[in-house]
Picture 1 (cartoon, one colour):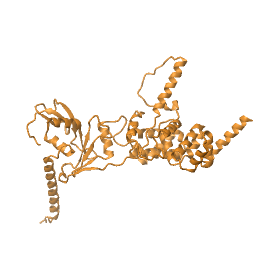
Picture 2 (tube, helix red, strand yellow):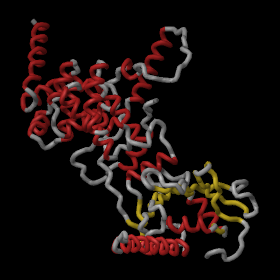
Picture 3 (spheres, one colour):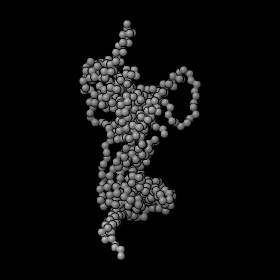
Picture 4 (cartoon, helix red, strand yellow):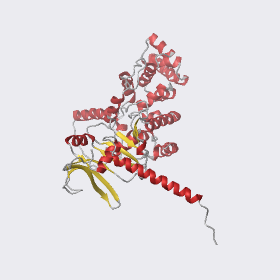
Length: 125
Length: 324
């Protein structure tokens, strides 16, 4: 599932947008071509910055993505993660891994704040 | 801003959502008899339909015409006006979508910013209504998008001209009375038509906001008794249907009789009987098989506002005057 063979054509993210404002086009392209350069077609977009409703927008041309996947084109990891979270492909193992790590980090942060409150305040001499 | 006048979008939505449930006893808005009556009642006032609006500047065109050409041009104008007067559909409010597709608790916290991921299918051969839009929440739940989210996404990726991404301030309840009163002072007619035009552009006909705005507007018109504000506009049919459904046609009937539109009065009574066939009035009128002005008079004597009968007394006096 994950990079079974090194396919030349990929579905990947092409970085557009501006400084400090990334915006990705989801693109079908030859591995060797520039990241933002020539591509076969654009099959969607991904906005990594949450909007005012706390949404990250992903647009997908499902009919075209299904075609390319059927032909055997491999998505790169970020794209595979997106497609997994969107329900088109199975959830990527990295998504599970990152989720677990975030949960643990959050738990640890919580425990740290609790512990620091529980500790007696240092007395001045 | 050009407030689009085109009906094709609404008719498409209407055809898709037409309620085909089996209650055939009482016809609904899209029934052809109801539509025929409402259409005729709406009337065609060419001066009102083509009243000046804010439009891109154009060089005026002058044409030298013969009598025949002028007559034909006038007829074409009426046809164009009729196209613009086609009614947007009156639909039931759409039901909320809440389907959860997957509840993957292991994905809880997958997003560092604790934001939702909204996936929209932007395939070109899919209608906006059928578009697949799903949301992966920060806690791992994958669900269908709500109607509000759907409207937003459709507007972002497939924008409708004139529609705003955020609901206009006009529609917030605290603003609506202000709009009516203030602008009624400034404009002779009152801005009910404008309000409804904005609603038509902004929302789909079965959305909560659309229905709410339309009902509030009709209520205000009913309160002020200024039903002719919507006469010869595409909203007239909707307003009449709303009032007839609730059997609150007294003020409307008086308004029509005031304007001396006897045909429309008859049509209104016919519509009442069509939508409420089991009332006493409807049954008796059907038994007597009356039509025309007699139908109106009979309805008024049996049920209608007594004030309206004065129009018939005047009519009788006039006919007596002619006969004598």
